[in-house]
Length: 354
Image 1 (cartoon, helix red, strand yellow):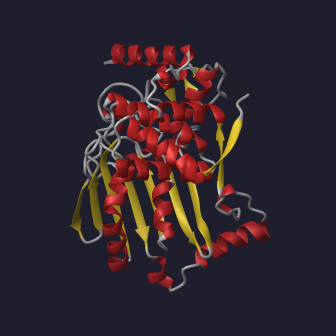
Image 2: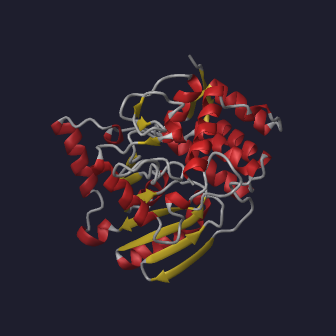
């Protein structure tokens, strides 16, 4: 069982930035990515928090993230903003486009941002959360390299394509809901494989197309959408919206966890100025609070929360981060033999089907 350590957010943030700088990230990119990682940790979405940061560290070292690029932002239509990450971070592309997006939203009542050419989205809830902090209701979706089956396909054709939305909460942090369109996020399957643990039935199929509980076999097959074909429909919608700005389709996106090429995925973010419609900024948040307080609706996103001064982090993750920040290379020995075997089978399966 892993142990944990309590650290100030400032201390964890500084450690993340130093680790990212050690593998070649620019200072600004390191700060933006660190913010999104800590957002995920605070939200309890740890699969795309500190643990996921090591995917970024690997990607910088191997070239899957292009370091030092400056995102290109354009406004092709009054309510449309396009940010090209150019092989870099979606988080940095968002920051480069945010002012333009929020200005367009105030001017038109709604506006949309498309990010293309990005590594991965990380915690998708980060983007609508940032919009909700500015008083907007926001909906986002993104795609990722193909890992999930659709409509009985013999292998992966879509990513785990998440959907997230956020609502401003006057006097408190935004209400944010963020979920993958698969039964579970790929990083959860990878963690099970690394630990030599089984996965629940219904999460994935093996390379033969049949159900599997073997976590190390799942990457050589495909993850499954939540809710059967209905979840697949949601994943396909997320794919189409996210790639309208020119992001790679999931089938064409390079893997995020090995190789040397950026995945080039897309992100879509729709911002709505609800105050322009009703003049009531807090109406939706008040209704959601009524569901919680009067109707017994229990969702983590609806529970009142305060921003803690400290974070509780996994001790082993912190040890590895310190190793990266100190310039060591032992941190790269993170995959177990089970995870390595799964990766080898996945490559073999793709080669055989090519």
